[in-house]
Length: 126
Image (cartoon, rainbow, N blue to C red):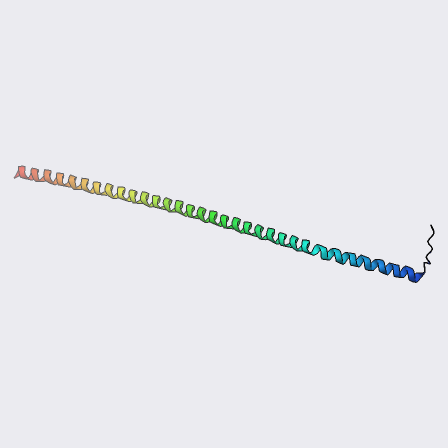
């Protein structure tokens, strides 16, 4: 079958313009039809992003809690070690004081014994 239409330049130009306008209309119709889906996808992405951010904040809060409890535990251990050190120092000081007191008592006892012997010797001579 032969194309009986007379294809002149103006006809071809009009057909091309009609085709372009049809493509443009089809594109704008598709864009308008996709708008609700696009909005739904955007809302879904926003919800996912906010959930992700909440999880990140929760992880950070847990890390801070763990770090604080670890620091508290370290401080507690350090305080216990310091208390133990103070107790050891105090015990050593008390032992040194007790030893000094015993030495003084022993010297006093030896002096008293020497004085008693001296007094007995004097008494025997007199």
